[in-house]
Image 1 (cartoon, rainbow, N blue to C red):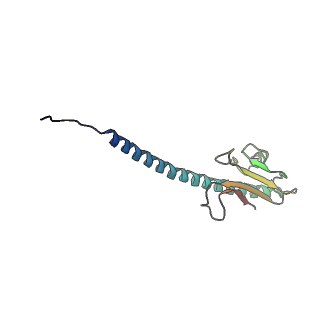
Image 2 (cartoon, rainbow, N blue to C red):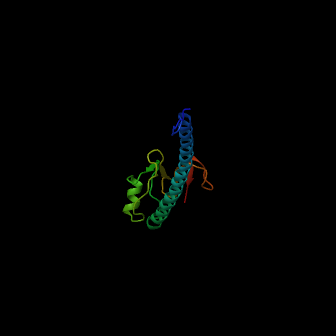
Image 3 (cartoon, helix red, strand yellow):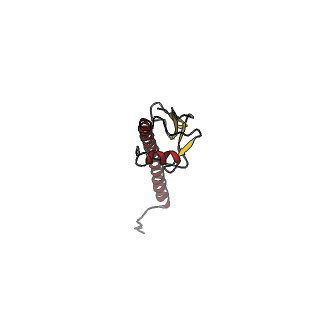
Length: 139
């Protein structure tokens, strides 16, 4: 009578274990990806509110908004950002967290009486705004 004293895992057991680990990893990655998108969208809304506040302060001091008849992409180094920072109404103009893939855009009428800030969102989680780049905010 032969006694076998084999210890260890079979190849099938190892493959099943690896498949389970891979599935758990992919589920975790998918969930974390959604959390990152929501976080970036929350930051975008905060950034846009901060820019809007700076524009209001600028208008109070200058009786008009910074003029930009053509759309200006807000990068922090653009002419609108420099004007707001030089006027002391904002310390640093924020750019989109995924710039240059997404960006904030600013445009006024010819006289600087009103403006539109356009921005993108990655989710539908922000009330009154939708996923995509068709979102706008005005004074």
